[in-house]
Image 1 (cartoon, one colour):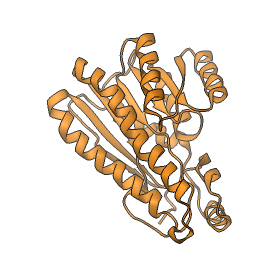
Image 2 (cartoon, rainbow, N blue to C red):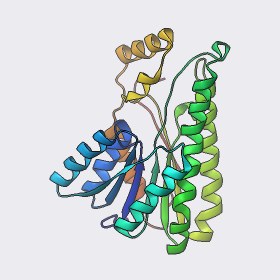
Image 3 (cartoon, rainbow, N blue to C red):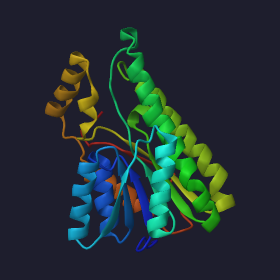
Length: 248
């Protein structure tokens, strides 16, 4: 079992849901956490909670779709803590709609945040991990990154891409640079993702699912991240496919 005490972690999308829950779990395990998101007020509150429990965290205002903002945030984190040992690419949006509705602005936002955001943050931290010949990069894909369904075509496309990128990256940097890569693929989780859905029919469909089955919560996914992060150094948990028991 690897000890993450004293390690530095960067969590994107840390203002709510899976990101916030994972930041809390990492801090409780002794990691110093960079809290990255656009909603700074949420990050300040999360930082206060971590500190009140004896942990350490820094607030990083970051829009992952903006490479300059990502680079500035990583630089601030490294200035504060010296390096980056763990990256959790978790920021994402899910404004569902059928393709024929041509919500092209939403398509581009999903590509910019869900996919390009992963690339921007990975590019910013990778040189630090290569230099120290160690690191662990997590990225959140989805069950939708394994199977496309109506209403999720573009969202699924971004999540398939994240899964493919994670696997290719693992093969490139694992043996050569001693960097582990893990793709997290959750099913239904009670997060704010549904708030991004403008289409009334799609919102109603998601709400109906909540009445039928018990969704996972952010802490369930955070536990999985912690499990992979604390695996022995010779073990790379490459994928974690995590589903609610009641989800088909």
